[in-house]
Amino acid sequence: MIDRVVVYSVQEELNHFGGIDPTDTDNCYVYVLADFTVEGWNGSNWVTLAAVADNDLCKRTVTFAPFSTDQIRINVTATGGWSLTRIAEVEAWEAQ
Image (cartoon, rainbow, N blue to C red; front, side, top):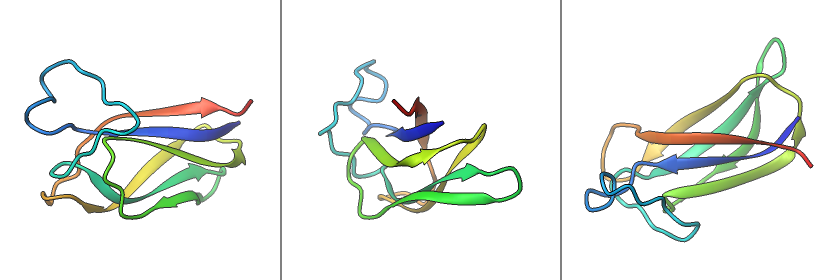
């Protein structure tokens, strides 16, 4: 059972090879995942757990009602300055 994910966009050119983890307030502009949904597999279908719009953060925590699943996916519908989707990392957290 999970109740949140943390999605990391690739940081801007100056930082993404520097080994510096983004904080909760660091902005991204070029590689940011601007609009996306977090989806969970219910055994037969993908269920939208949360939707994010107009995101400008490199590290975005997304919370939702606890959901039991063994698969998640991030469906990106808009990015920052590039037409490519660049996800650096996704963390799924167990509901407490």
